[in-house]
Image (cartoon, rainbow, N blue to C red):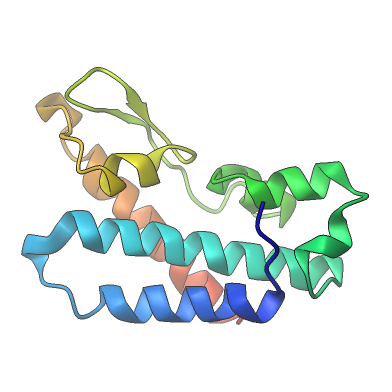
Length: 141
């Protein structure tokens, strides 16, 4: 893991969240990717703030906390923040039959992987849940 400090995670959140707002609906892959990464950065900022650390290197002796920060699993981060019931990220399938969930969402949109047509509204609901988390973060950074 590359070391990062709390300020950088906060900047990552604000930059990604602001950038996604200027993208039109045709750019939904990029918009969803920025939303995911913005939320991820915001949650990591809040975790570091809660733990009273300024830099990830301060957690080198706490593998459990470091594992949370190394992860892309938003559910794990929300749980560590005591917010596990805030949203429900319903998994959906890619066109290849792989499951997209709170820890793999970024991969589907980073690589532009097609989503199974049978996913229905789950893909949109997932984005809406991410937006709810982003709004919650917004009031805390």
